[in-house]
Image (tube, rainbow, N blue to C red; front, side, top):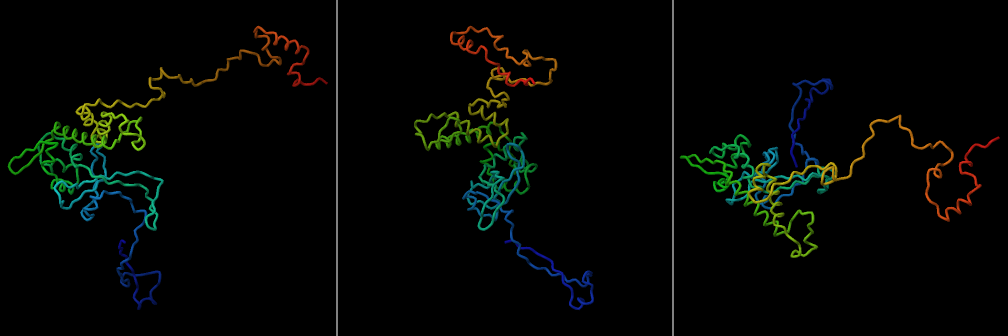
Length: 341
């Protein structure tokens, strides 16, 4: 329940009768502050699905921050824990993924929440945020200098305090000069670190039999030993999962690093055939103008049909007998011709 403050103005009792009810002066006004209970609106309620490790940290030191996405550079929402971590490698950065559902609402307690979007909170390795920032400079600089131009000050302070040198050395080279510790981006170390990430993800996908192949069948209805597994497909799927946090150029280098061919260019096929327009059926040409000089090949104004005069098909005995029986009968057009008076 939120608390609000309101200002209540009253007139003095001695001046109530003499003063005009429509006019009030500042001298006769008495301001009194009153605390009001303001109920939170259901339209402000949002649904989050958070991991258990985030709930164990408590919400006192967790805040929402906007950081550039490592793949696109566009602003994205994250949760960051500013409290002191109990463990050395405890996760402190979480990504917020929104499942957009514009035509959905939720019933929570006795209220209807109009915002039907589901927000998934998942931990993310902070090195993915640092990777595009460190790669912009080849000089050895303190980690705070690498981040101060791109991240909020509170995030720079938290990352400088919580990131260990062993983590930073996975994508950069450490250099010490007196009391100054600097780090320089290393592409070879970064590619090796990403390769380990892909290998770990591919092993998990293979163990759980998770694939995106079009010919794949659910493991709930088939024998896992009978299904054919393609290790390269699992490896490529893992590259795509890790590649969602990498720029396009870094992802191409990662594919070469793991021994996979580059992704083919997926162009939209306008003709609907995989070989180009020459292999498929040709489209009908649109008529752009009406030709007025074109005349019909046959004269349809004549009441008699010209089918018998234009065809010279050899007739059998049965056809000849029918033709002989039809002699002397009236034509069909005679029934629709105007009668003579």
